[in-house]
Length: 535
Image (cartoon, rainbow, N blue to C red; front, side, top):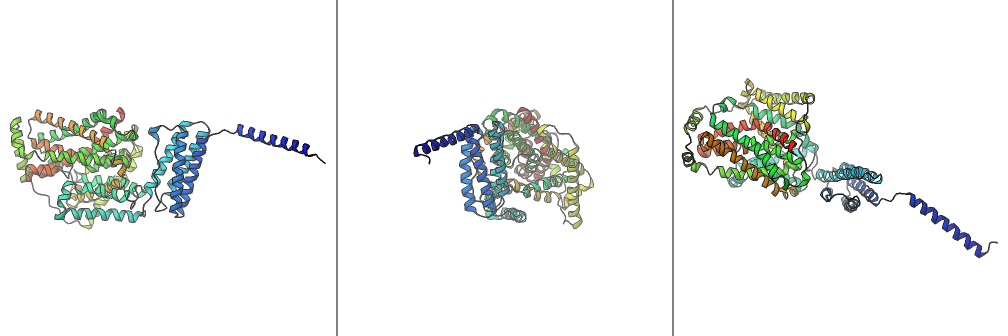
């Protein structure tokens, strides 16, 4: 028999051997608390995705809370720069739509953990950024209504209701402050930020890719470029001076105030400003066209919508004060008013457009022209060369469609305008505007002050260029005011300012605005090229 003392010695020796072996194993295994935090975060992301699929909102919410805590610890342990840290958006899932994005977040977190384990901190930071993007996308896809047909129906109903209210006398005062197109941005924003509609959906991308080129064709098809040319040198020179002022203002404001803009925009800043330049030369269609061509993020476009609305309508309010001082301002400059009187006579004597009821063949022709031009542009664009980030496939599609539409405006197809080409294009435009608005976030509006400062500097440069051109031409203030609003305000606002000088001159504003719509896309892309080089 083994004595008690011998047994104790053997047991102690065995325990020491076990502890020594465990210590050796632990010493060989690399310790990476950051990786374990990221791995736990990945596990919580998969748990949240599973709970979402099983419609267990409480479990999903709990997993997302744990995920946020693990992400915070992982970011600290990875020494992620403060400027790159983002708090994941916590939400209570209302549908199964966020599940795929949560799975993508889990995969990105696993890549980040693997990169950290191998000591590749740069790759770990990049993967963690992808995880944050996926989590934000999960929230953006979540909504009470996610069926594409239902989403499209609700947007169409909201737009129809807005136009109906805009014609009601009791609502005129409200819509005089913010026109229907501004509400077309913000009502969908309310619908998405309250969780009724998703902020991201494949439907929105499909609408932008197909409807935008068709919209451009229909809006430009009826342009009467010959009539614009007959407006005379003062109107065209001041309009083009205003366009140059917008391009120059974009560059100078970017250099002077760009440092105030939130850093997270990155290269999105120059892309967004290019889209805004397109809007301030042509209008909302050009804003969307340049935004699509440069592939600007919806969140960036949403921020710039605030700048567009606030700055352009304050500028319009100022221009509407000029008709009361028209003769005084012209006399002070010694302006030659004969050109203005000639334009007024031409406009008053010109036959009015006589729209006719559209027949089935007209509607089919409109659809065929728009779709054929769009299809050809999309087929040709991949074969054309690209020039950096400001001129890719999407840019070529927009440029080809715009150029083809200008050419068609000189053919008999222009007669389709009387059948409602521009009216159909405008309807599609409002749908596109709604798709931009639905992707907006109220939180992004808090960052608007810096962008607004940039916008006011921008419009100041535009005004200074117009003042110089007007002094050089000794042109009536009418041409400066209408040329400016044809740039900044577009077809909806330029006729209003022109009519403030004389009701018969409203078509002058409309014609110049059409010219702005034609040039807007080109001007926006030019600004994009310049700002890309300066970034």
